[in-house]
Length: 321
Image (cartoon, rainbow, N blue to C red; front, top):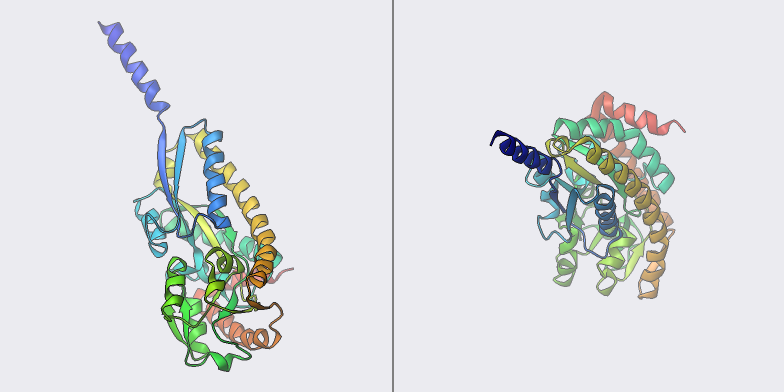
């Protein structure tokens, strides 16, 4: 009897060690976005690399949680991992907003350098909140969309400008517009009802959300390249066995490299499609860039004051070419 009992226990323990782990991964973005497509490839790769031990279900388009709730749900352990735009949490810690300082990093090469310069502080900040960074991927540069022509920033005075993070709220106020907080999934409806007149977002959002149906003017001011982050709850990560942890991190590194390449390639495709759909696309937007650069310089100085010595170290590291 003892031998049978021991045998059953051994089988049970073996089964437990091989138990399949199932996680949910919420995203605030639509299934047709390159960010979600990259997520889907990531979870497929994780499934394959772990031999099916770690199953992750992607929930796009804010279907599980609203975009601005996702970080909190990972932090609290409601879900094991999730994707969110870093700058949306800038009110919590300055490092989350470093990539949304206008005209600090305006190209993919500069954005990568800023990502590398700020990553140690980002990892530290997420860790203090009980999360582990898996990877980041930038959106194409943020440019100005408007329902009416804009030749100078004074044309934005008195308009309703969509805001999705502290930086965009600051810019709206700085140019005399009224900031209106609207998440990307709700933007098309807001445009249809006249809730917003203009906004800063990427070429990707313009195509993926069919913004060309209600907005006719695009100005390529290339203000900044906001990064999405995929993060995992530290306790959930720690509960995985070592081989599964290593597989998850390895596939995250692959997803990051793939995502950055996808973003840059897609940007050029999106710009061509916006023009093909009837939008008036001004890629240079020279005068607007000059005016916005002054706003950016003030915001960089303000950011450093808020971020203190750690923030200054990030900017110093970034500026070392």
